[in-house]
Every structure is written in structure tokens, then in C-alpha cells.
Amino acid sequence: MSQPIRILLNGAKGRMGLAIVNVAASEKAVIAAGVDQGDNLAAHIGAADVVIDFSFHSATLAVAQLCAQHKKPLVIGTTGHTAEEKAAITAAIKGLPVVWAGNYSVGVTLLNALVRQAARSLADAGRWDVEVLEMHHRLKKDAPSGTAETLLKILLEERRLAKDALKHGRDGLVGERPLDNGPVWRRCRDDLGSRRRDARSQGHRRGRSGGHRSRRWGGHGRSSKKPK
Image 1 (tube, rainbow, N blue to C red):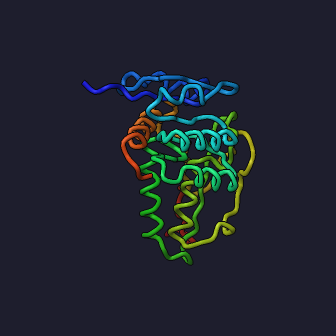
Image 2: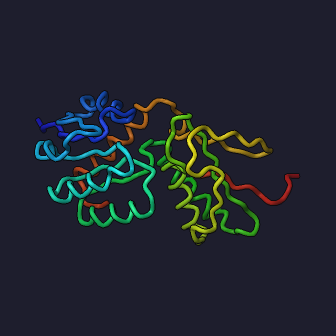
């Protein structure tokens, strides 16, 4: 019988951290240590097979550097990193088994693929405008969210646009964004179809398994013409 995967969980007292703690045993994993703000992550890294970071954007770099030092696979679920933080983290994890996503929901992963397909199919930029509309609970700290950032990245890649083509309606604000009413709209919640964090933790567990075993690392189209 295979041994359970030992997880060092950074951000164990947060919402997603608690969700991971609750489902670990059902996925043949154990929380070797759960740490949070003020705790010593380095004191526990030797007992872990993989490190999961669901903490705060400014804490991820130190976690990545520690994992690189000890050659530990890393799963990053933290969002809200600045461009400078992303660059530093990317440099730190070079050559390390890492899974890094803005959202681990299975539904959002599917949404990413569908948005890419739609962007390719509606490649005539002269006829179609693209908008990503997101709504979150009032305690959401980062804006745009990791989910929205991924969708925007996909759209920019498929449209071959620079990042300065983006126009933000919600940037750096905390709280729910009001719904814009119109003839055509799609509301995309952070967890796409489920408001329970344990649903997203299922997708995260797939990421954890991939990070441990591998060494590889939205919106709606709107016609400019009126419907007949």
C-alpha cells in the first residue's frame, strides 16, 4: 500500500487552507504541518513531500525560495501577485516541479479552454468585442482575481494584443462589483457553478498530485451588430 502524500500547508488557517485540511485524508494525503502567518515554515519542510501555498502575495517568494533550496515540489494557489513578484517567483522556481494557477476549480479550468476556443473562433477583432465581468464576495482582496487574470491572458494571447489594450473596471478594489445590465451578459463567479470551497479544493488536489509527480510545470463575445 502506497504511503500518503505529506503536505506542508502554508496558509492553513485561511478559507482554502481549511478546505484542504478537511479533504486531505480522503485523497490519500496528510497534512504533515499546517503553518500560517508568524510560523516557521523552514522548521517543517523536511517532513513534507510537497508544499502548498494559499497565503498572501507577498509571502509566496520566500516559500518558493525555500522549496528551491530543499528541492520540494510546490503548488501555488495564492493570487494577487504584482508583476515584479511574479518575475521573482518564476526565477526562484526554475527547474522545480510547480503547479501555479489562479483558480483550481475544475469548472474554471474547463472555462479557460472554452474561452481560448471561442477567442480563436471569433478571431475577427473588427466584429467582436470582448469583456470579462467578475463578481466576488466583499472580502475578496485582489482585483482582478486570479481567475480573471488567466482569462485576460488567454484573450490577449489569442487576439495578439499587448497588455496595455486592457481597460479595468475593477482594479485594486475590495468588494463585489455591481452587475451591468444589458441585452447580452454572462456572470462568472470565482468558483463557476459552486459557491463551496471544497469544490475548488477537488481541483486543487489534482494540482497537488501533478506537482508531486511531474516536472512540468473569460468572458463573453459581443457582436457589434444588433440582433435581427
